[in-house]
Length: 467
Image 1 (tube, helix red, strand yellow):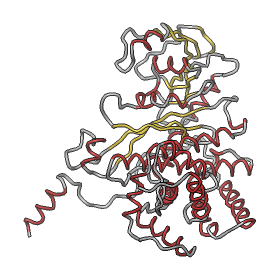
Image 2 (tube, one colour):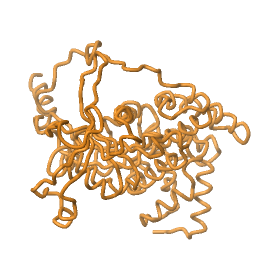
Image 3 (cartoon, helix red, strand yellow):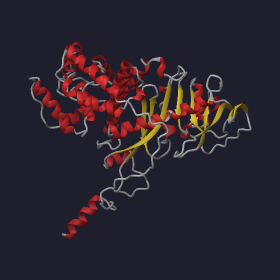
């Protein structure tokens, strides 16, 4: 197997990235530098070869495929073919087989590393006014994704046990840590939908290294447990979580800070969790002082009318009860971010037929999401708005619309187009709809096809037998 020397590799990287900076569907070459891509690939020990689908070319075409509305391999290769012919380069084969093999060679860890780096970059550059009381708030939330019903996918990510064999689809659980300030994905963990240590808290513990001292973790009641909050406190991290439904809150106890606002001591559970080792269990303190604040929702139409927020932010002068109520309400941004990923970027139903490629497809979506969020953060900074006030769908549509003009542009013309694109992205602000509520019902009726009640091969055989 032939290998390139380092100087030749560097020249090839720079040449390829200069060429692909204007590729339709790939407006992010200025955000992912050649050195960054090369370093990520080399850290995984990936061998370089003189071939059309080098790691960086494969990555860029992969991102263009995810960015495209159809997310089709054939269209991604056709875009590459059109680009090469238009630039006077030798035409590549329209067959998508070579590209699919190249995606298989691309290390999963490269996509994961680039996603983390690109997610953290806009957060590090965020102005102080985007932060909450000068602190970084990180949202933790989980969801699920489905994938093609292949034996390999079923083995790695089995379908829900409530579905009959041959009638369901493999399903995986995804837990993501978002930045509240800029909306980027800081890290993610993927696992089975059911089984031992596959729940959201278990996957979230795999992401603890993403958190830093002085961070504030914002999450729902699924993450509100003694051990979870103690582990966060051990790292110098505060939590703002919704009280778990199994824990009873008695405001007659503890140190009273205000109406329905007090500090109380939680006792350490006597039983050591199965997932925790004895050393860690012994290290955790016997008591944990937490603050409990009741929040009343007075808006008509809201499902929840009353809930309790639990936090380790005990200073009621610097962090008031209304501050906590308003902050916890921002937890909904995690749901909106997941909707942007699963609906706007179409990550809800994945296309790959092997578990390894499924994971790469997830990371490719997360990386593209972070790159778009970077563009949104720059647009927000330029136009004096905040990132969460800009529509993600509007930003994605604007980027797609500007691609044909960005492709041939050079020099000042390209910079002018970029500035106009950022201005247009910032224009699409999310409507100010305070306390909006809608019935959870669907008006449009689905097609009147019957549901499949037997595996497809059996249904096909039965149809053949009738004829």
